[in-house]
Length: 237
Image 1 (cartoon, rainbow, N blue to C red):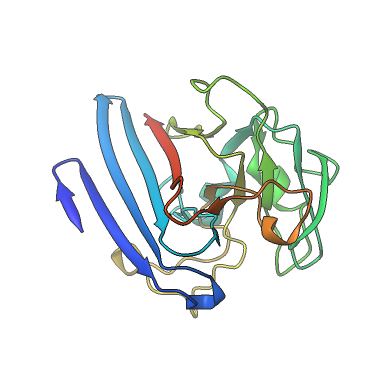
Image 2 (tube, rainbow, N blue to C red):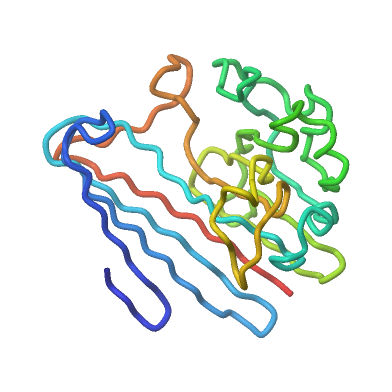
């Protein structure tokens, strides 16, 4: 681990065969916070991975939960959030939420069209039957300029907003549908989080791509081009 005033860098080594993956893989991830103004703060995440001796499929992401109304705001706070994703397409899923391998238009399933700002309260009750009720969708970003946000979420009561910039082709948008206060670790200030207490913006490549011939894949080659991923969350207040 390497720590600096504005960043922290972690390293993990995954030996050949761990969890069934080939090759001796080394991964670094750096988290950096920068304050651009009194009303704007940025969190950047930079991944760097290399493998020494085998071709290895790799698709890294981050599963941080956000609730812009405050960590104790719970489902009522999440309801107030307004989300927008620059994505005309998304992945179709099976009832267990694994990809079918087909790509569909955003909005084919009621509540999933986030091309214009949508209140999460509307979509949370429409998408998927229990126990998966809520968003757990992979959206494929439109081809837009790098300097434009791929996604944004606003909590209007507080005025807090997060914009997402990334070099990844899409995002898995998840609303904590399976959070369980009885079994999950206790959170900040001893608070236990019920379902829909927060949302995740998991920037990544296509899920299950290695098993789908029509999905773009990401492999790390031995002593070749490394895996690099860059994502930035811009918070405004």
